[in-house]
Image (cartoon, rainbow, N blue to C red; front, side, top):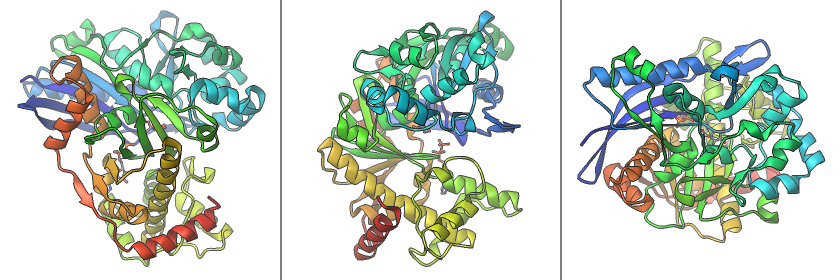
Length: 489
Ligand code: ADP
Ligand code: LRH
């Protein structure tokens, strides 16, 4: 059986996995892994897109050196960010990082001028200050030369795919995250685009996950000394790919894609766009095969990543397993934070911000790294409980447990505490959810798997799922009460 290749680029790291399907069992091999380090230049925070493309090429080279000729490849990545292509087909500038400050205040202004109802009823997307709509509006407000010279808009995987193939296509799952795509009409929302001063001509036809969208270009074949490789669109939003890989056996399941962000929700077959969804600020992101993800973004392990970076800057380097071990030794529920407080959104000194949050809420601030990590992980677990309750309320479903996928499930303490907070079992696995979702969409497109449900069954049979049963119920019930009181949720 020939291998196929999945590139999964998260906001903290990227990887290329080779996958093989043997007798309804998936085997994966990690070909390449690399950091994804944004670069601050002056006031701007940008993605190092050319380095990411370099790493994509490195994986192709490694495949060649290993004697592999992938039968196809696809890319998925984090959402909302984009590049603009100018006359002659060149990328204009480096894509901005969604945590850049250029969108500060833009969402509030647009909500007031266009109305919250109008934006939500046309897109069904959660209001997050960094959504593409606010990034483009910010460029327009600043009279950015980038926007003036732009002829095409491509999301990050569209852009990297364009570098690989020379062809430009906008992929559906990522398009929906822009808050500029109307899932009810099934196309870009021209009225919103015009309202933010961006020409609809930048936006191309939208291709569905599973579409073949070219092959690697001749110059790249020459450069690397390799043959043609067909290129597919996966569910190019990493969360779309992650949910495609959730090893559930039936429709009414709850998931948590746990990485830089924690994305919690349920799969639905049509967007839920109503007053309650708007009030609870849920999203309806498009997925593979006509599915939608009714979910909420939770700030996630970003707070831990950014704390680790602060300690590193102070000369103290800790691995994630070391930080988790330190947290385990600390007393329970010393201090709690609301992970989604806007003060935690942007890059910076997270430990200081956590202490500041605790001081302003009358709590004793955690001092040591272990105490800070404990505060982050317990607070996340309690926030998961809150959001799962909202998901049940909004979807009308009742969940018997929670599927967790993504790099964060390597943190067994977080998985156990999530089960404790929910009072329900957590089923953790697979770790590489997004890359697996990317692979199975390619196999379905090639007729190797029949549909998403067969794919989920094959994933379930091929990878371990660790079961965490709830413990210490009374303690966590009390902590949940304290969390709700403190955060005002
Ligand atoms: P993304 O795709 O958003 O870049 P990942 O899914 O790779 O993120 O998850 C990264 C997170 O996983 C890290 O922030 C860290 O908290 C957690 N993590 C990674 N490796 C480990 C580990 N060995 N032990 C505990 N946690 C880990
Ligand atoms: C997770 C993710 C998430 C988006 C965020 C920008 O990697 O794609 O679904 O909201 O990044």
